[in-house]
Image 1 (cartoon, helix red, strand yellow):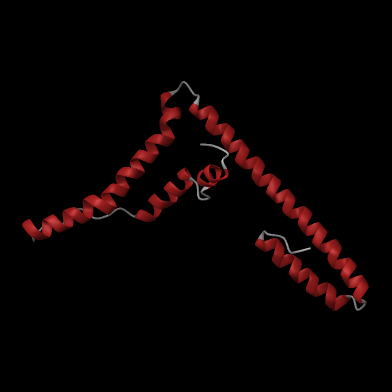
Image 2 (cartoon, rainbow, N blue to C red):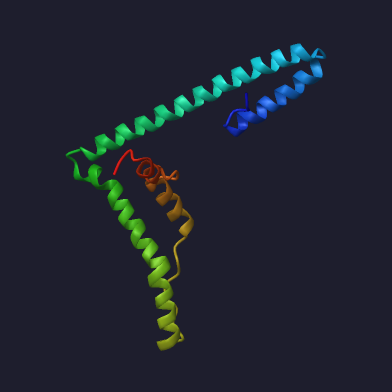
Length: 145
């Protein structure tokens, strides 16, 4: 039986196993205690995964309710935010570099406006688009088109 996949639980289990080996001299009792400890850790990991799954399912339900809302502001909030992020990305990676190039050629004394802090933009895009790539995974597995 391997260690749990959630890293912090795996570290706790490994620490517990080290303590068990120091406190219990009998090898058979060590193995029994290790097995019991790993079983508890796996149960804890499963509870954490179930909780995470429930949270994600709750967010999906909220997304469905927002998408079906008759209120245009609630229904269009996420797409509008994505469009704003797209325009900001276009400015950062296309408009600003081209403006700097054009200014350097035709108006050497001028400087185009500075760049916004892209760190917050990437955090927002990551949250809106998802960090896990689950859509690509679903397509690959044939769950959806």
